[in-house]
Image (cartoon, rainbow, N blue to C red; front, side, top):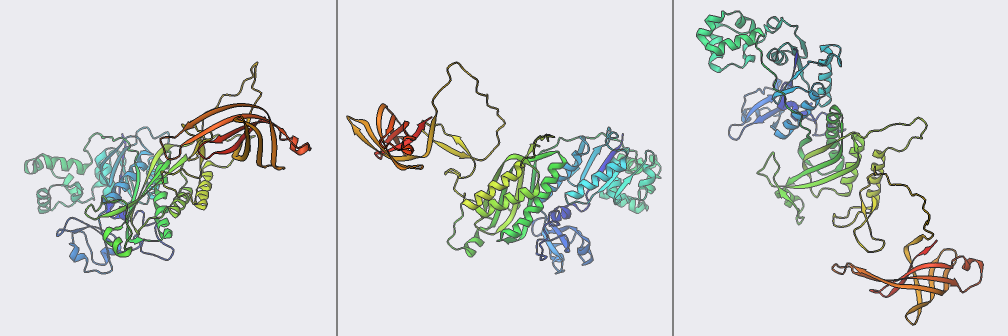
Length: 550
């Protein structure tokens, strides 16, 4: 059996700068952290210490273990508190990359992933190709990792933690290749580490050369286990975990953003990472949930006096601070994985529904969905992509100002019938191409011979009654003739219907079917004589022509 280990050094710092690498503004704004001297802090006051630094911060004099007060003595170093939400997103992205290679994966630590290489020979020609693919996938999500491959899990883990880049250890050479690593990499107890240091044992090779019986007498079974690890002979089973399909990215900004343009740079980086993670699982998304944590409530009152916020809560990272939330949800008609189209949809939605205050933190979540199957015909002409259609509809919403609240119907989408007896009642729903096939019309012995051609909106008309029955009709705004007058030859009705009497817009109507003959004898007027559907709105008392029978 062969195993591989993926190790991300300086994980808290890489998680903090993973999205910042793509967030650099054109003018070199403050969103870029990857090119600055950065130190990550952890702990609660007064015990706040440095847990990770990059090379620039180390050269400036900041090292791991320093207190916050000591680190603040270097003004050129940027100090950031540890972001657990960012580390959780980075670990999820790391697991997405590894699950794309092997289904048997173990994650003992957030920065460490183990995977079984058994059965991958048919997909990858060599172990080096597997390791190269892993590093490439991890680099696409903004992380740098070391890969170790060995015949047992512990040797692969020590190779990934102790060497930079890709390390391949042939079977039987574990002790020789790991011999130069320091003993502290075995994570012994502080007492055993001090004892080994007192004996002059500094590396794996020196510990492996000690006599096993004498080592057991002095250090017990813990010492024997450390020696087996140093020799690369420790064996254990892989404890696989199931893939968690959660795709979420979080960024906490240095300063609140007030403009949509810098916020778009942040959203672009997050969408690139989400789409890369979805691609690693061969998935797409049909829903995006965007949560914007606005500036603190006290700051809102100072910057915007008199402006009220609808929802107040505390973010997970800082539950003590009161923050207002601005949530937006994009439901897509088809699963998509194009970051540029998704970014355009978010930009159009935020331009129509801007946040009421500067943005302090951004959380973006994508609901996974299967890719849309697409079969290209050889003889069929190409059709527009549904993804591009959704962008076009979003542009239309932005132009017509479709920013009505959820209680009011939308102005852009697909028409749908309402559960009502009111004639012509319909609503607007988000556009979604239907996959339901409707049965075709079959020929019958007695086919229908009438069809009602409905006027939208109904034409206003004036009706003269004789003995409560329509006798003469004057229709306004008919095409080609304008005002048209007809004599009622025969009338059928009335049929009364009503509804919504329990609401604010009740309706009552009286319908008639009238056969009309033109009073004028010219050719244009005689073309409009025929059978009409006429109704009277009993609430307003007005008459209308609803349609004509063909």
